View 1 (cartoon, helix red, strand yellow):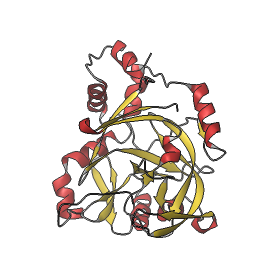
View 2: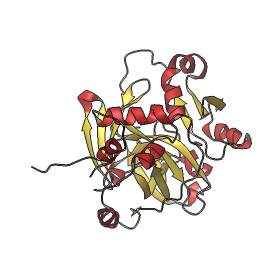
View 3: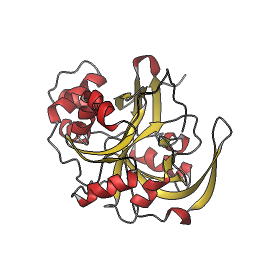
View 4: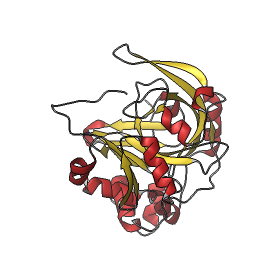
Length: 147
Length: 137
């Protein structure tokens, strides 16, 4: 049984996984502290060899979640991601080529030096900063490859 | 032909251009509280995951103490990095211990490469700007 089927059984009418994701994000915006830590154990040890990671994951199998836990999991940084999506013009106008730390719908620090930005955010009380780089509008049609 | 049933769907992230990426939490394996959330660009052409060196320092790692590792870009440019084990976590996919190459100089974007893709099953549907993941390789 997949996550989506479980979510559907939980009472939310869904026609596609994408709609499921969006519905959950919409339903949960603001419902979770974005800085909360998570006690999940590490499931995979890649440093000791890729095959080990695969073996452990194979033992764990598909992650099966209830509707409640699926919804909770989708919530991390949902507010921030939606805010980034809906405020792209503001970001371009005021923060192009800068790093920002976003907490909820508030930019708590910004600047060209990411380490300084993160430090400022921590000083202001953010325990785990969400740091995002605002790409500047390129002067011509530009494609991105790799680094 | 194998059939794969994926557990999760992710839309491409929207920036200057859309890209397949995951917002991941990078944390120090010894001090979980030393962590930050940042975008990782999924890059099937990257042999290894590559993150900017300032991130290693920010989560309390001594960047210079990691194993030396060289990166070569498509233009032939060489970038020096240091490898450190960190925890890369995603709320829906789980936690992964990964030896990430942290660059000594600045880079524009952080890459989740084939070492990360090796730990999951992923499918891209570029035309729909979506990708699908099952947290099992």
